Length: 110
Length: 112
Image (cartoon, rainbow over all chains, first blue to last red; front, side, top):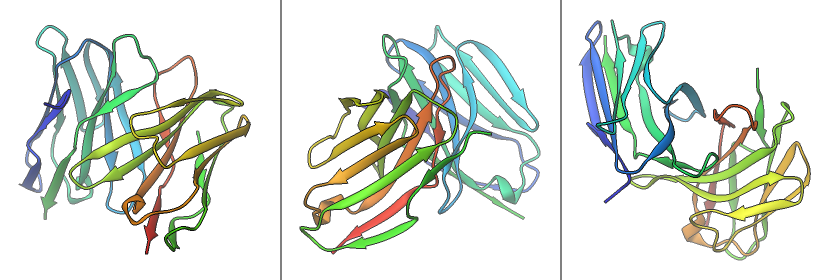
């Protein structure tokens, strides 16, 4: 069983919809990251969080440490949000090594 | 803004060739990483360097070596490329204050 599980694997939405991507992890962590990768492109860090909630524009990331769960929300989705979203954790004791989920492919149709 | 650059976006090599992938970062970061990304497997850590000339094996170091002679540059070496090393290779860097990693654009390597 992977230490970091994402759901769903694939997600198709219509423009304007509210989107949620989930991430569950099985180890103690010092930080959780949400990353974005456009087709053929590099990876961009969206959020790094260890508690609570962060917001940037239309993106919101939350984490529940007790439940070992994080969600990434996209409000008013747009076709340019189409990308792979990756959850990764710094597991306890390692502040450099990231353990990655396998990613969620989001397609937003106009 | 942090910039991480990689020497090639696309590379095609023959089995048995020695392959060098270079990564340069411009933020004076101590930590640098090499990952490979494969469909269905996600990102996996090959090697990590926490300072000049210092390195640690990641999860899948077999068939690879690394070199860090200068702080800004981290090289991944495939001593004798094999077809199972066909993959997307991503470099990243990180400072020691924040945990955020900055990724390069990736090199898609095909070994034939």
